Image (cartoon, rainbow, N blue to C red; front, side, top):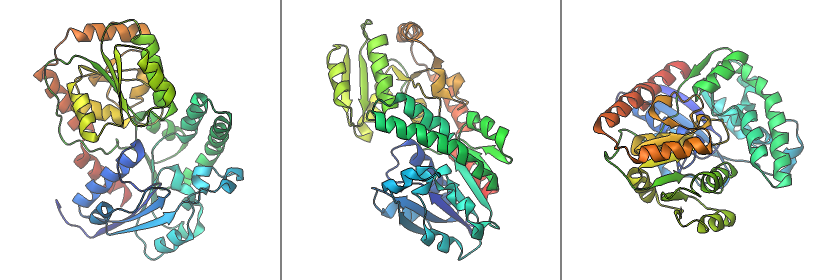
Length: 375
């Protein structure tokens, strides 16, 4: 540990933050790691629904407690959003009442605790991972199954109404500049601290690669819609190798990719395989049709890959615009791919990227800011 202080903090997580393999839990896990390195005694509380208890969390925390998330359908019929109503534990409240340590709630998901009058004198901060009602509205628009679509629209409406509970928090800590701008219009004491992440140093190979890569969880509608767009609107008529890598690709995507000889699919790559794919690619393309949250895969690309081609929704207040090439339609994407293909990624560009990332996304600097705010 860097230094030791006898400072305790309750951290309430919406999920078990290991393995750190999707956006929200990546931020939680590497925040825990950074808090541990600063000597903070974290009392971790996790809602459990599929992920198992793990020793690595015990090694980072003063104590770890697990609570079963109630995912029964009865919560669908409540006025409180399902993501909040299904995370409710009297056992957790009783643990929190045993001391007077400050509390950090991860996401609106765990903000039901703000309504408990027994905790009203406690210092409670909320890490906002998204503007949740916008996120669910976008999920609804992307979804094709009628029942799921209805659920997402319904949840979005409930979340928008419920968001006012955040007034009861001592402060909000937004994950992106865009989110901070939004929350600052509605609430007091809003700060911006970027996502915590696994990257310590930039590890980019200078020179050139011979393919373009897209990576993401391919079972998520947002991502397979992005791949479908890239395959059919961008790479269908340019003779450049395009690789798609990610978890659990659906059959319709497998079939679509098989129709295009210059497009190849790498399903369920290991972390090592994905890192190699990112670092060997000439261009990593990341587009989204949902301007919500911070796309942590963008950081993964910037720390490990060469040219990063994105649309503006991907950046979404991340303050990373200057490190990316931006294109917002198929014609612009094609034009940039053809232009970038002729360029070499230089050592000078690597140094510039490292300096910018160190300035804004350095876990050590950001955890110092967080500790000052929440303790």
